Amino acid sequence: MSSGRGRITDEEINELISKLQALLPESSRRRTASRSSASKLLKETCGYIKSLHQEVDDLSDRLSELMSTLDDNSPQAEIIRSLLR
Image (cartoon, rainbow, N blue to C red; front, side):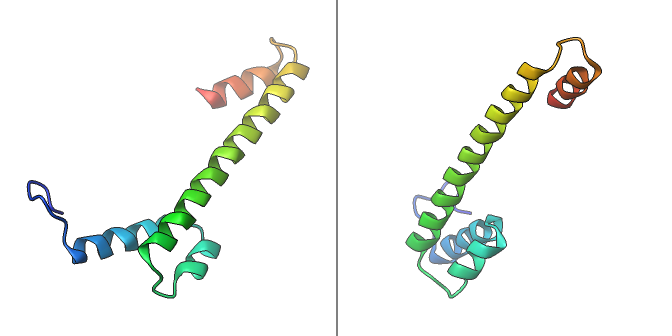
């Protein structure tokens, strides 16, 4: 990469785009696989990150609801706490 230099090369940008595309789920990769623009890939990536944030929030809410139904000293509550450590 261009550490120290002021400008990143097209080759480095293409390499970063490929790496970013590899991080997307398979369905997003298919939509952007047709050698699409970097801006389209970035939009897909932003959407994916937003969906991950929403999923984390939803799971956190579900976990809070579950924990509120358990006795704090129950074995189930202890198992959940140990998994969160």
